[in-house]
Image 1 (spheres, rainbow, N blue to C red):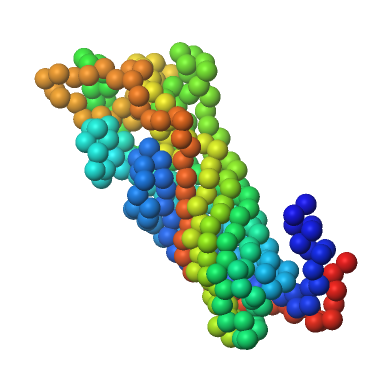
Image 2 (cartoon, one colour):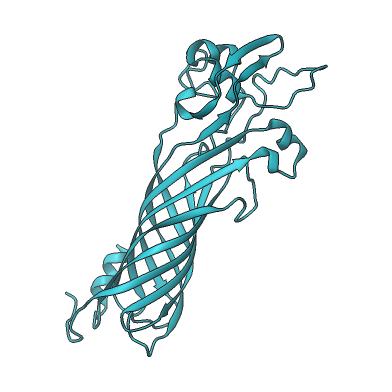
Length: 284
């Protein structure tokens, strides 16, 4: 309703469309990175379309591709380093956003050179957390050893917290395509009558705690080995054990299911104006 009110209550005297490219970085917040912004950033890029409704409001569509990762081994927290989990994931997002310019700003009009703005919207994204493990023999629980073929494995099919197993019927496998809520801030400039530049940072609230494949408690590794194979058992618990006093982690805390994960894109957008409607055209 807010969008319809904006579109139909203003005189669109110079509606312009822009297309462009995005380049920047992506990162994540979750169990393996609890609070550090821009920690372990990875390259991100994408395509942008912006429809300028008037000099204060714009609609924007994004198709963005980035990478996120986390390593307990890089944490300042000793207990987290002992847990020793890690993951990497590609994130592909398609989003629709509404921008509000704080200053009067017309794309291509050099008399309105710049404006800070905020944005919010809805998005759909795909992710697929993976982890690496070397070939070797692993003690998956005290006194139980399994031979593991090394490689990079997708974690969701392995049900590393017991998802989808008969022993944990209440734990369902998480979906790899989900919704997000993007929001953030930016600063846009008119470089020329045809070229614009925007610097933008946006966070994405998600509805999952499994971007990193970590959320609840440790599952029984023998159950995982029986139903998903030895790799599932080994990747479910990578904790650094004292060989003289091994610990059974089953049913102890692995993650924090009360907080969902976040991901972020930050970077620069270079846009090109492709449409200019007549200035005396009113919106009906």
